[in-house]
Amino acid sequence: MPTQDTLLQWENFYIVVGSSAGALTGLQFVVMALVADSPARTDSGTIDTFGTPTVVHFCAVLLVSSLLSAPWPALSQAAAAIGICGTAGVIYSLIVVRRARRVMVYKPELEDWIFHCVLPLVAYATLLAAGVALTFWHVPALFGVALFALILLFVGIHNAWDTVTYVTVTLKPPPPTGEGTPPPPS
Image (tube, rainbow, N blue to C red; front, side, top):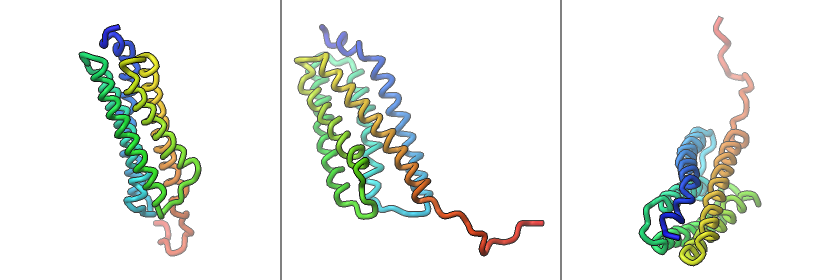
């Protein structure tokens, strides 16, 4: 099957997934604005561990969706691009694992390890494997790329929601006691 026919079958999937990743990247900026407005301050290491990777994952999904929507003359060229993205993602995931082990302000729980470290590493390793397999077994490889994209989209949604709930519930200032407040206007 020619390259364009193979990739064209996935066109709608990548339009939906890429558009979602782009929109969700904007959502993460809103999440970070909430973090900035919270009464408790965090250090850049915590943001580098729990905030920045979410944006990176959304952008990776957007990039891969764009790459597989390009008119590649040969499937091997698309495979190389996907493999490079997978390799970069695996390396980045290992950096995030190292950061999570060093974070001092917040102690990651099991759920944090799963959603911030394990699942992204699995997703990027799947993308790397798909890049290697794309020219030989294009159908399973393209399903691997789809799995990568969906894992990272759902991980990003979870992580953004987790950050918002943490900021609003855990870092929320206590309600005022009424002491020291001026009387209501008469």
